[in-house]
Length: 138
Image 1: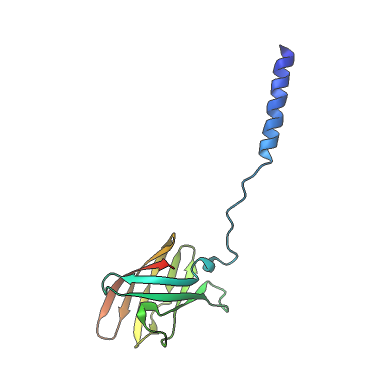
Image 2 (image 1 turned 180 degrees about the vertical axis):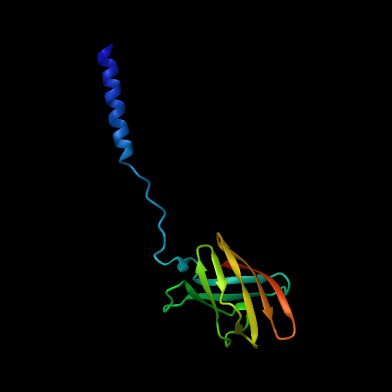
């Protein structure tokens, strides 16, 4: 009986040792956390009922998470891109920047899965617009 118990304990110890050496591979994290934002997004704005596309590109000179957003607020391809900073799941427009036809924009969005929910303000010089936009990755 003692020999059976000793054998069982030895087998359990070996199994525990074997399992402790196994680890799950961690989910790969991109070297640059901005990479999850880069690419083409379809944008739907609830107030304006506009649908358009934007392109988010990494700022190669940025040391602090900077990205360029081309056609933000449907400003057009000839407009300067909006500039934003990525921090985890938040992307924040540079404060009071001017795009389009001298529009002043402010706001930040939250990335969740393949969507960014992005409330922002746009001051066109006459009216301060409060806009809710949903960016969906294409």
